[in-house]
Image (cartoon, rainbow, N blue to C red; front, side, top):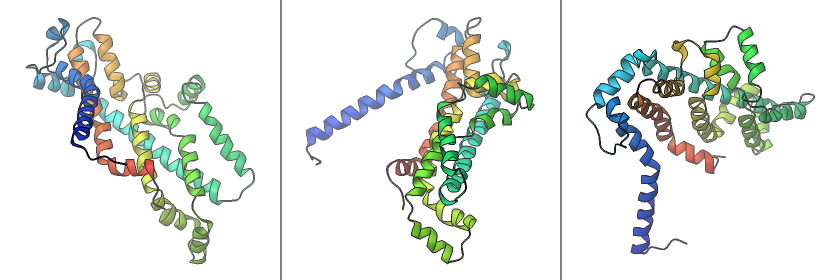
Length: 282
């Protein structure tokens, strides 16, 4: 039941404003810190108002980088992170769709065993098998490459499980009707299953994009060339360089820029993302 009382509306908005302010306060502090010089930040004061070095700092971050500390510019690192996040998200969705389609709609020996073998990999994330995974990637010559950054992270038991559960809820009569109309497996998959899973795929894409964007440990292992640094690695290296010379203003600026692509993805796909989490279109 929804009560329409003025004081309750005011209290609701106050709570909403307070919660929003608490969530956005660290972002605001990081952005304000990126508008000061390194000397001003090194004095220890927490900046809450904009400084006078906004344009100079962001021009340095995007164009030259912290070259004096041997760090590359942030622009290429943002591109590397974007390529990595897109490849991981799209790769996981494509592989999971195909594997779930095969498990649900094809009758082959050991079908359930194949599914549970995929499901068991949930207990073996990259962090657990990182040494043998690194050895395989090194033996295949994939170090310092986009393939090495993305392929070990593409397989997803979670997404396969979600699509399998979705496909199991689709009535068998629908598949039978498609078969009667002359639709083959690929046409049924492309024209019926993919449209029915559109909202779920959108929600999954947002989650997997952010997962790929925030990857830190694996890129740190497989990349030694600055050409393949990701922006998360750049933030870490900027803060490490701050031990010798204060570049916290550049680190805060880089962190601010690193937040923008995930925020854009969430805003653009907000409607489908929420719809995919709470309902299906069947």
